[in-house]
Amino acid sequence: MPLHERAVVGAQTFDETAAAELLNATRFVKGENGRLVFKKLPHAPRVPIFQGFQPGEVVFEPSCFEADGAVPPEWWGASGNADPACAHANVLAINAALAAVAKTRLAVALSGTYCIDGVVLPQSGSALKGPGGVKAVANMPVPPQSCLVAVFGQSDVVIEGIEVDGNRLNQTQDAAHTYGGICLRDASRCVVRKCNVHDGNGPLMGGACGNGIRTHCAADIVIADNQIHDNNGCGINLYFSSKRIEVSSNTIRNNTEIGIESEGRNGTNYAEFRNEAIAICRNDITGSTEPSRIDDHSVLVDWTDRSMIASNRCQRSHHNGIEMLGCKEIAVKGNVCENIGDSHPDYTWAAFRVTAEGYGENGRSADITICDNTATRCQNGVLIDTADRVTVGRNAVVEPAHLPPVRVGAGVTGLNLLDGAETKR
Image (cartoon, rainbow, N blue to C red):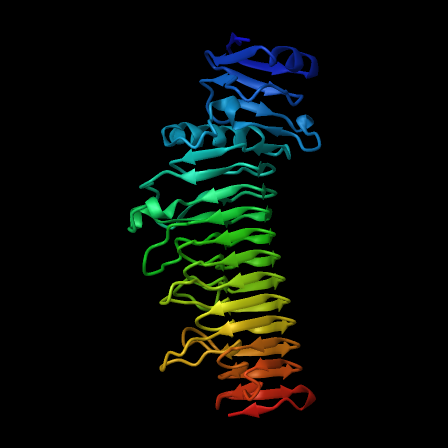
């Protein structure tokens, strides 16, 4: 049935009865100063019903909230048909939909693949949900250090069940075409879960642009149950004053840099931007199949305090399994590392390593506990150098059996060995 067009002049408000009656057969066309306010969530087909409105000119009030309530971006003209020709319209439509549901706890529901040529911007108090997702167009130009889905300065955002496809095989490897998947910057109380984030397009020589999921000055964030793979960067990067972050039950594989990194620094200042209260638990991390990588650690925790790394499975990383440098008060418990470390003659790798970094104030690690972990077919089990007050015990080196469970360097003070753990210097 064709939709009846209705011009919207000035602000028009629709209560429950009006919304139900009108939206089954109406397309709203913006007129002079046109604005729509809905007090009840309308239910209409996934077809364009808002024409000519800018973000913020269609508003859903908090009274619209209902369990599992969602609006489709098709109402604003999006097309989940995987057609690159629709990319610009899709970005405008998805962002208009996210602006409309801000502070309502409603979701914008993606169904299909929406090609995009810009950044999707969830707003405070909204959700972006699948089962569909977004895909970068070929040769997509974005600002350096950008991402495809960006939560910037927002709070109480949920991103759930979407696919974020960077399409990196069809991108140029230069600064104008580099981006990651999902970024939460200056954000708080947000959740990213059950998403499939892949093929972010970082530069060939690294540089933190192609991360699957990244936090930056963010707090109280949950990143859980995601599939993160084939990004040209880290799988998950927790950067620069990130606090109270839970990273749990993610499957991370074949990214070109570190699986999960907690990086509490800004690149030049190594003292004032430390991460803290980071929980990295129950993740399954597999290194890249590429033979040469810049940093192929399963988990790297640097300049991070009062945190837990527990019950992760780390495998097939060319460098270290779990490494800590410049950290304080870190507990490493119940992790399994398999096939860690290559045979490069200039480097020594381990399943679990504690060391220092030679930048800024006090780059030594201190107050580290490494207990009840397992190392199988790793270059070393536990390797400690340039660290203070480290407790080690009940770690098993399964294979090779002759490998000492603990190797200790000359710069270690305050070593506490539990259960008579064997060491080698």
